[in-house]
Image (cartoon, rainbow, N blue to C red):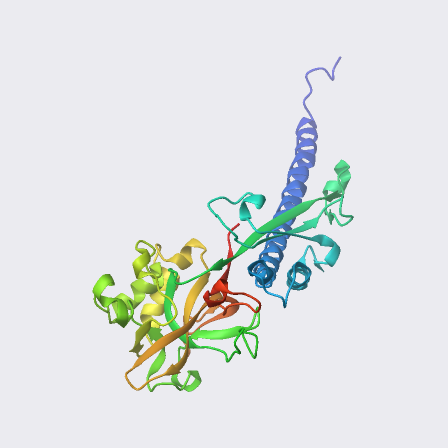
Length: 349
């Protein structure tokens, strides 16, 4: 009876039990974090596949030089360039669906023929490629499935909005936009930060331009120049409020000289209301073929680029680089009325 009421060693029992619970929670957190990382990696693969594949969907407009199979192959090729859960995405992980209407993929608001592609990248038990977990195996769950989906459309385009205030030289192209043209994922400097590395089209020009274009000052207000206007144009992009003020091919813009390093860095890295601080890293950029002596550039096409690097310090402060995503392209072979339209790939889900 002398042991009744003796609490010696009770704390050790409680600590031991608590350690088991804490280690279980730690293991669960580690595995959940790993699955979250794998999900993001798969999403990058799906986005890349959808962006690349949709550019091959021109057959919906009567073209004879491409097909749904080519679009599927393109989507898989670019999805398979990505790592997910410590290995490259494989062809068997990727499912591609194609439709003439995005509503088939749960995306509304589109009418008529709007070529669309859905890319699903999966690491699941059903696909034979689940993600191996670190600690959950002791609980009888050594593997788990994860999946990502992206939808993109190919849309006729006369003009658009949310441009960054930069213009870069276009790539040469033939009548169908295929000769020496941009390559998906190609790296390019969108805005230069230093004289020694910049484009040589105009002395003291580092790629900034002023909004709105010269030919739309009557309807969209006078051209806004200077550091403050340039910084605001980076932060918010060109306005989407008035379709008549959308920018498109043939619009002419004043160039803004000076490297604008300070306003560039402020807009992309310090202002809380910047598009860049809201996770929007895909931007529309003005493409031009020739710079003229009047200190302006005329837009040949519209390009979309994904921001990959923003130099905020050092000799190249204000230097911004990105990778090519999509561009408007000419009418398609084998078309009639649609041949005069321009098209651009847009990720919509």
